[in-house]
Image (tube, rainbow, N blue to C red; front, top):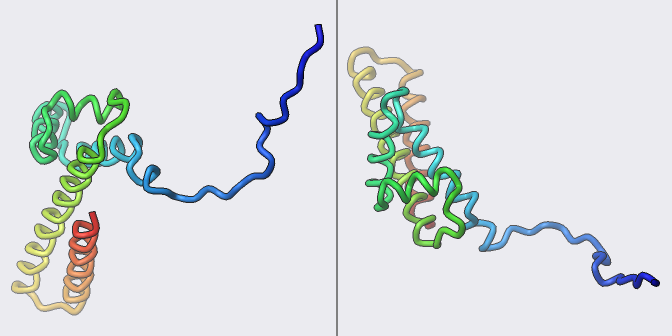
Length: 137
């Protein structure tokens, strides 16, 4: 028996990888946001169920759906899910920066220091970047 060769299975030339809309909203990206959010919220070993509950509530999902997304069990998360998890992640980051700004303000009222003013300016720039990212959803 003769084997037939098919050359159409071999790519003719390599093309550079370009980021497309599909790459930006892939299941791995959704899982990444969910995992990052969970890791930021969880405080210790026994806090895992409360952290999942909080993350799911922030993402407007059920706890089981959030867990499945985080573990990679969700085969094809819809773009609305990716958007909600990304929005929850950015909102949590915004809350953390607001807390940091409040702490910096407290320290600035106690003692005036140029380093604190520089730190306050950097925190404000970070807050502006997060607001920009949230609007660019």
